[in-house]
Image 1 (cartoon, rainbow over the protein chains, first blue to last red):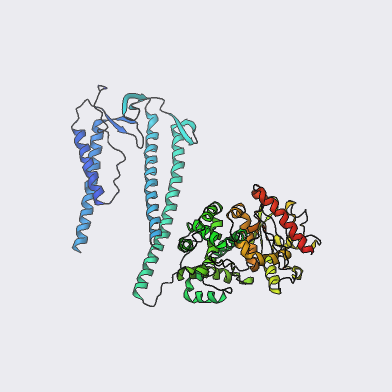
Image 2 (cartoon, chains in turn brown, purple):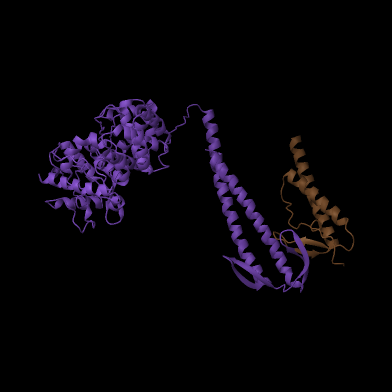
Length: 96
Length: 505
């Protein structure tokens, strides 16, 4: 792959996404971020390199684009599930 | 009541968040380290400064340099690094657990306060007991509250009244406060003693400076200031003098006393002041709670009523190093003597019960007949000769009475010089009611810390304009401190001599 690639840190999937916050707002913002990531990754040309940032530091490791894309998609799905669950629980509470 | 636990809880929660993040980071790091040696080299983006990157390779993937703290590093393999990370994670987990425990504890407190509030709201018979918390704790230099601005020489009556009015204040006084007050009172005494014939004005000024310390004082000070207008200069002096909080405290208390005449205090303030004093008295029940109101002859200015209970006060005995010893006996003895009557002679002292080392000294010194010269072995400094324990307060006693007015007058200069001594003197003075005048008033002694036990032995004390000789042996304190002031030293010597002479007589 050509070494020059847009590597944008945008392309790097954040590996430290915190999915555990139950709050709806946090979840919604995270979901938005994840959506952006997925879109960006899917929008990359084949020759682009994707780097992933090492947590808490400024080092970026080369990562596989396809892998990253699938990973990000998974994360997005999970976040959405959580969001749905919270919504459902809230609805049930309201009903009660 | 709820705010603090809640604050603690939120604080702990924030910390927990932080530590969880740290734990997360370590986990990621561990993951990375475990896979790092898998490849010989990695293609990475190498950071160039904070904003730029360069494509590069990561080589020597198994060599990791670990920061051990304090800029020490250790080079180890990836697996060893993993072990280190694991160890750190353990520490982080422990911290998180502790924080969780703290949160749990405080949450229960918060719940309790909430329940309490509910209960109090619901049930009418549950009364909220409140005590005014005087900010005594905050600084030692609590101003000594004048016994009562309106008080007469015998403050006991007033105290009672105060009690009735403000019961709560009494409860408040804790030992700490009492001690702090005592100290302040002592200082004030000293201050008073040093003051010359302008006790009121000076005091008022002093209070002004000290008022900063306490709000109450401020109120009082304001009053005082109004009354004393001519003593502007004195205030400045006081400022110098009252650079120390303690001193200020003293001044305040003194001033408070003086305010008695002015009656400009708010009743509340007075009460508070009185109460505080009452508390002191109450607490000092051991000793004779004699409140001597120091009446200053100069009535044009607010008279200073100085009252203090005989309580064990810390007497700083200059033993070469600044050591403070407590001596309560002296005061008690002084009181006794005083009660006996002026001139009855100090010797009448009952065998002083030795409770503190200071007492021993005192006794020791007294034993030495002739001149009450502290034995050298006891107190190394010779300068203390007169002062240590053996300041024949007897002679001074008489003088004190005469000089009370004079002594009480606050002389800025002197006061400044002998801040420390004043405090000590105060103690003594407090003990000896008659000693209203701080012996220091006249004598800008080099050692302000002289503990003067005044024994009213003979009223014929040669009036020492500079210093009032404490009846009881005085232990000069920190002469070094005051040594700077040459005047004082010279005066001091003379004073002591005079005292001695008096005693002989």
